[in-house]
Image 1 (cartoon, rainbow, N blue to C red):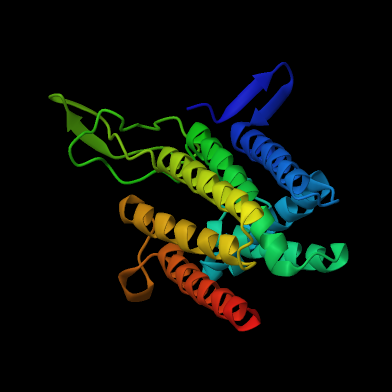
Image 2 (image 1 turned 135 degrees about the horizontal axis):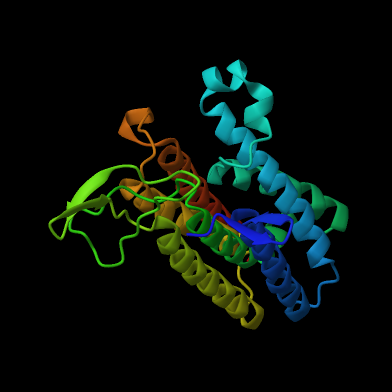
Length: 266
């Protein structure tokens, strides 16, 4: 892992670098989607605002997951470079997109449909930052010592458990869950892009691409959490799993509602 890049007097956190890269690539994806729909909007401005709102939301959600620690030392936790929650990032970015859709006078459901593939791509690339920095988003030790298991002894949040592997004590190899999420979210992005392509050929009810985004990313995160090291709270689920269940339910309701509304208009 490479938590920091040292370029002369400059020290660049790889997590921040990959988040910035993810936002940049997401803006290109969004601009391409606007282009194929003949929609006039500045994708780079939209991603910049939504990305900043997402980072703020992710930070706030993370620190408020442990209110006791937060109120004991709020300023340090608020401005720490470490600790961001996926669902908080989603909420922050979503609120920003709702506001921008109104300002751009683009129907909200259509706007969210267009932004969904770009959001997946940005998230996927950001997860590589988690992998490079070893920031604790990895999974639990691999039970069967899978060959793709990784150790993060020098990570920002190092793997400190010791396992006996190949007859010798060493740092435990853990599931590289950021890599899992990288590939899964790119696959979801490709599927959502394909949905958009089909809707251009044969119009679909607006909101269905976004509904699939909520359902598929919710399922993916729910499953990945089973091998993550996050503590369990609500009904034996981690906070991220509880948020994932909510995401899936909202996605299913939105999908059914948009389909019903479309049939009523037909």
